[in-house]
Length: 235
Image (cartoon, rainbow, N blue to C red; front, side, top):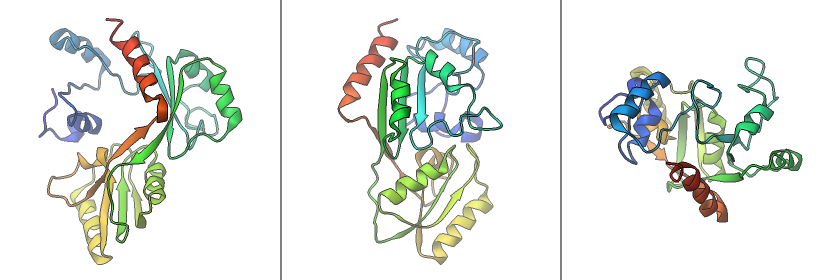
């Protein structure tokens, strides 16, 4: 069970962030999840980064696509960003969702995805936090695609004095945090980061959290109905 005072380095930053929405039971080993299901009997088990893991059966596969980068150079790691060939991943998907700062403009790419005849949705990332656009900001994050975060801020009118991208899931050291504070004070800037990064920082660390939401347009209800059908009505 994840608790508020647990450090993100022990339980994971996503698990800490999910505490804002309800109780969280988290493990980084799929074999441990077997024992957790027996002890807690959860209605839903969510596996992050388990799409390519064939060791267990999944009731629902959700494939997400970065609508800004698509499939990159379509090469597998380490030559590119792909963990497997795109066609294999799409064939196993129950739902495909493209998420980004803009909708996919590549019509041939969209037609290719749609040709698989799978439920396909696009979502724009919306910034929910109100910012003073007369201020300057220093943005930092530790996510897989930091450029997407910085682009979102600038798209919403924020003037970024500096951008700092750290490795995914990284926990900033006290020295690194102090460097950010010193720069913000020197240049009269506000610090801003993601919600996932905020949970890894001390409570008294002054930083603005960029809260976001996903905008599925008029198809949100349709997507939720599919999720409800595939997850809860199977049980």
